[in-house]
Image 1: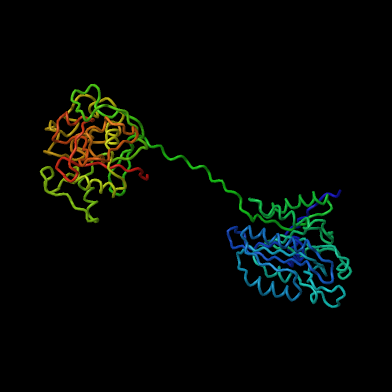
Image 2: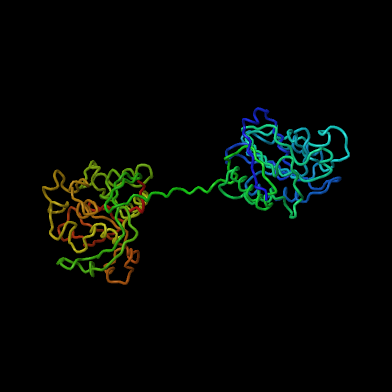
Length: 522
């Protein structure tokens, strides 16, 4: 068995002999020419199969190979131009008038020719199907010089050739077997012959030549460059022919016909959000705090002597998923931003708690339940449910009366008993006047103003068989729940479990609201 040797000739050697690449005319399997190194560039292919010769032995493998290569290139997203059984005039018209004018610099261009080829004075020629082996005269009068095609191709070209089919008539006519050695090389050209120069290829036993069959195996393999495809083809042809057929290559290319699979690096996990982390909502410019999902005990705690029946029994509730909630009550200035351009009715400026609306960082009051609901929708969310409100207000303290513990402290919230702790303000205070936060960094969860929530009021809501997960009361009933107590309330009304209710159409000086949104970008 002969070892397969692939002779890759250097560019420098061929450059000295000046660039005519008589790449044995792409006969046989292929002159695969890629014009451009960008895999994303437009892809164009020329496929010619000459099978039915009138005066030479027919080559079924040539027609079969051309058809299968056409299909393979189409699957690789090439725009394929194909022709079969061309005579000399057909070669000239098809190549020079139809295919070449359609090429543009930068195209990825594939040319495939399968059929007889011959050599004459170091040139290689396509053999037309009407070639007459008895013809006299110059070779260019009876065959198509491959250099006419190759010289007009632009950019990177990869020429894959399996055309040295054995024909005693052609040997007699030209005086040589197979194809000629290339007469030069270019930096932008890769030439591969399906057999050594001056070596004939026997008619295959199957429907395809060995070189074509191997090429069809490796063209669609993802992530192989042109050179890697040829190396794989070389190995397969050597194995199938038991070393009798050698692949001949000039030049290399790292262009991909089928790009490699790009495995994106793993994305870093999103930054962990901790309970009480703050983010600004760009819609209303207020700061929101993150409330994690979890479970708690809702309602009046066992040690509380001021429980109302509507706060009982204390019962387990699960809140999921987590949410963002304004870390203060919605302010006058934020509500003014809402009403400025949307035609929403503005709350009355002159109130007993905020003369002429000059205190813009006080909680907004004189808003109905619908006003509050509309604002939260505009901000990207909704009113909190009653369960969400108490869960956020408790911040993990299931059995305490107040956000800070079980003893009422007038200095920790704006209440009827706060007095001097209000500073210069008689009623509402700025939302951070009492610089006290619960464990999840919410201000004024009790005191300052009461807060609308989403639920319809039901005094027996805790006694029913409602879902323990995200409970919310929507019907029947008219009045809506308000939570948290106001500046006008004392320690009984400011307990975390205290529940009150009001006609949703009424807005008063003691009632404001917070908003919940499901997501906030960083």
